[in-house]
Image (cartoon, rainbow, N blue to C red; front, top):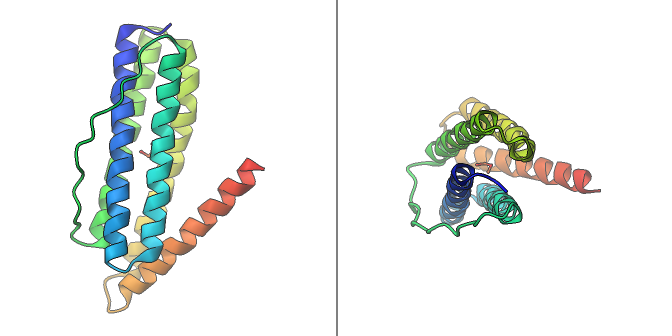
Length: 174
Ligand code: OFO
């Protein structure tokens, strides 16, 4: 059993992960429209990952005899100023999610709730990896710059990064 406060806090996190999944799917679609197929595949995979993150918490809440609430879907924006700005937004969103996970961890210490604390360790690690990935991507985008062929090179770089991530995941799953 988890406390009502913890159940409410985890339900908020479910909503945040669901929103990330929906926003990233919208980004993927915009990239597709812009002919950035590498970026579209990358954001599609990110969207699917966020849904998995949401479901992982969803199942945990129900398993602990609390009630996991299906979040409302508010429509994400559909257009982005540029691919550079879009990735800046992803990075900012990941930092926001990390801050939310840290607040949950603080709540675990406060109660204390060691079981939820252990459950959240996976998220702490996942956020560290996601922030590192986005930071690497932002550095590459800055290096490529905004010259004539920059969109082509950004798309190729993101495609390469996506393939590396998928290979690492496949290796981890073996
Ligand atoms: Fe759910 O990991 Fe990103 O936000």
